[in-house]
Amino acid sequence: MMNDRTPANIIIGMILLITVITGIFSYIAPPAIFPDPSWGFQVMHSMEKGGGFNLLIGPDQLDIAKDSAQFLTWWSPGQYLMPYFFRSILHVNTGHAAVLTSVICELIGVIGFFALFKRLGFTPLLSAASVAFIACQQFYFIPYAFYNGGEVLMFAFVGWFLYGCFSFKRISAGMMLFVLLAGWAGFFSKSSMMLIYAAGLLCLWINISLPRKDIAAWIKNGVAIGIPFLLSVAGIYLFYLSKGDNPAADHQLGWRVIWETFTFPLASPLLAGFSIDDLTKGLVYSPDGAIFSHTGVVLILIALAALSLSLIWAILRFVPYQPYKLALIVYYLIMVGFFSYAFFKQLAISYEARHFRTIGLLIIPGTLYLVAKSKPAFRVAFGLIWIFIAYKSIERIHNEYNYNKNEGVHGRTGITQQFADQPTLDTIMHMDDTERDAIFVFVSADLGLEIQHNRFITIEPIGLDVKMDPADYVYQGHAGPLHILLPADYTTNGRANFIMNSFKGYKDFTPRKLSGEYTLWTAK
Image (cartoon, rainbow, N blue to C red; front, top):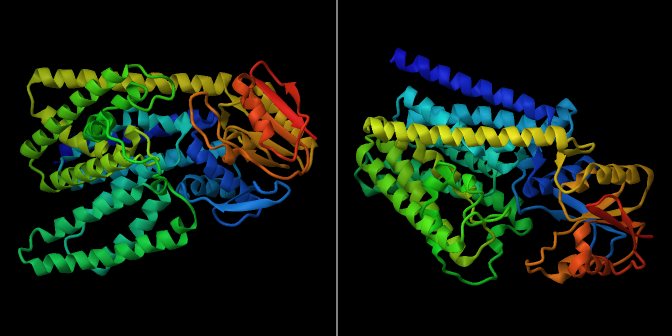
């Protein structure tokens, strides 16, 4: 056993060291920010200026001379509160705070999943190898190029949460306290953690009840778990979710059944566990352009769904560890059921493998166990797949780091701005420093973070093929000078005129070309 633990500890130590080194490079050239945490950082921006907890404060649509406060319930608070903590105690900028958050979360996550896999029955060496496979994938490196907020916090939480779910053998006060606090900690990490939370507690209930044959014991255990669960969920709803909208509330598009509705969730073990969705730049949701035709995507998803089901069946048949098989089957069934319904109902949830990250992580140790027991040819083939995944991950983080360091646009927040060039950003920050009572308007949630002395409005970008509600863009009233920064191509198809006409208290906008890519429209 000691011989098994020594190489396992070496592997985990190397992963932790590589994570810290990657974080140091990212600290030198801070990442860009995905839109979701950008909105969270806007809340942080408001809180730093004296606003209340979790309030997004900005010009009121009914009268921009006044401010309105919106309690931001669409996303969980951890994505900005943890960086806010580092900003407060270390006095670093937002970009550096995001990097510190990512490094700390991934260090915690690595140790957590190593402990979890051992708890579920795997040897230390196979558990360490599974974590190494996880650390070779693109999603592990992404936060150092694009801070993704809740995703990296969820990685830190899930392993330890499931470790706790499989650590208790009987009902106790400590177990009930764990159930209560785990719900709050999980929601702090990411709002979608509530599904993972419920599935984990189902595993806990089954695991402690299986040795008992009488129904009364199952009911007693269920009540003991259910009471703190309900208290935890009630607290989240009363003090957070009830104060605003969230993705689950947006279901006005009706029902829709397409091949992807069911094949995407069924294929999630391979899509999320082997970076297939990342490597293909998004099989279904492809903001940078699809690689395959729709027919090709459907055929690939059908094949991946069949392979995923075959892999699940093989694991359940040949892997001997009952706690692991319980976790795998519970999470797979719940994930497939919930997301098939969500896609069927057209909730505001995208077809992205990141939503299935937990099942992707759980599939890995079982897969490695099967590979270790397979013929040499299969082990060689899997090794080549592993090398390919690692190579593509390293290639991407290398390219992103070079871009962030050498070509990226940076302002006072330190983050890499994706929707401005340096001359444009420098001009905007200079105007912010020299003007007062002005309002800036951006079509990107991260640009407003550079505004320190004036107010700003973030509107949704308008795509040529995207439906939008004109009422969302209407702002009444008049305040100080209004500066609207738009990409130069917004002059086509009347998009710039539409946005300017949406500000009812202003007219006679004058354009100022800040660069070849961006134009500033000003009305005083």
